Amino acid sequence: MRLYWEVLRRGFRRYSTYRAATLAGLFTNTVFGFLKAYILLAVYEQRDVVGGFDATDAVTFSFVTQGFFVMLGAGHLELADRIQSGDVVTDLYRPVDLQAWWLAQDLGRIAFQVALRGCVPFLVGSLVFDLDITSDPALIAAFALSALLGIVVSFGHRFLVTLTTFWLLDYRGTSQVATVVTMFFSGMILPIGFFPDWLEALARALPYAAMLQLPVEVLLGKHTGSDLLALLGVQVLWAVLLLAGGRVLLSAASRKLVIQGG
Amino acid sequence: MAELATTLHLYRVLAVAKVRADWQYRSQFLLYMTTQFFITFLDFLQIAVIFGAVDSLAGWSLLEVVFLYATSGMAFYLGDAFISQVERVGGYIKAGTFDALLIRPAGTLVQICANDFAFRRLGKLLQASIVMVIVLARLDVEWTPGRLVVFALMIPSGTVIFSSIWVIGASITFWTVDSGELANTFTYGGNFATQYPLDILGTWLRRFLTLVVPTAFVNYFPALYVLGKPDPFGAPGWVRFISPLVALTMAVAARAAWTGAVRHYRSTGS
Image (cartoon, rainbow over all chains, first blue to last red):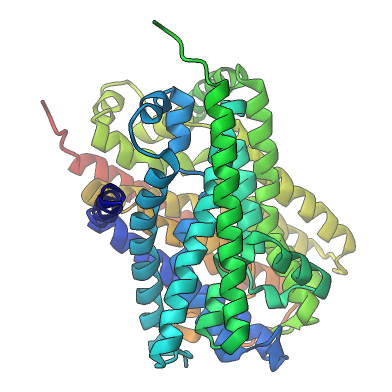
């Protein structure tokens, strides 16, 4: 366990080192937060509530979700490069669990990005708009837990997409398709309450909502009591299913893998 | 003029060589191009879903907003295919390979853009073009000669404006090296913003996109004229016609920025 904790910390440190890049990214996220907010506000000129969100909810959503863009905007893990080049072989005979290693690495990276790239656009946005943020510590804790589960679900999905490289030998096309589907069904493009009913039902039945839409609904206080527990339960279920799927696929891949050379 | 002809010729020769090389990996080439085609639908889906919730956005109908989407998309993806490669210059500087470009008897800008030319990016342009054809067929516009001329100049002007932003952003990288994402705000952000009528943005952002990074001239102002819409903020009428001039000014600024940046460049040496 200690090992994975260290991997997580280094993942965090590695990405917090690129300061200029981080600053540039924060600026981009903030501007996109504003663009999103203005587009949604134009909708609320004519409607009071869309899909359970009022204007304040929607604007808050626009800024908070910017932090998750880093996570949802890439369909694969860096591991895909190592599979393509064959370097994955050295990873496989190390005495660590491949999936746990990359999960720890990813948590370290994403936790940093989600927190920073979510908070700064949110603070800047709150200078211009009325944003709805709770001061209830229990709700904030529930959001933190839900966001963390969202990151694990997203990792489980990206790990699966990454493993397809073992069979397809390239990941760019697959990764792009995965990105498009994820961005749309997670609610990154628009809150899924904006979708037509049938599409919203479909989106809620897929794992993508658990990555973004559900955590933000928690933050906006849309779920309480047993409803909240059920939501967290759904997230745990997706996390377990996707991670287990990843393990099955990984063992199939290792059996298939042929190492060249002697 | 002769200089321009040489540059264009050089671009073509280098780009064709690159396309031939890429074509050796046919299946990935086609898969990637297809996914590029579909990835462009994301922004389109956003518009479609929004118009499922409301009938008009700040007085613009679905077809009118799709017209903005198509003009923005065509201009942006032309720039994306032919000029956007310049954003990789940070990588050249870090790796030290920019020196190699300097000692060749050709412009540095054309070398970067042509060397990294990727034909598959045209998949996105194809999608925007198809949307354009569909929207033109269904949009109810009384075409006068004036409107035809303004419309015909929209895409070239928009392409030059977006391309200039790419070049200026890349020029800044010579000083900061790591700020690639900053330029994305104005290129990808500009593309995103110009898919919607400028009316919906806050005053400060509207002024910024008109006066500082002038993406409002890519399509909003000329579209007001082509579609015969009133300007809710009462900008003078001639503003609708100056997109080509804005494009020219941006191109001059981009050229100056790039020249200045290359002059500033000091190799890391060995």
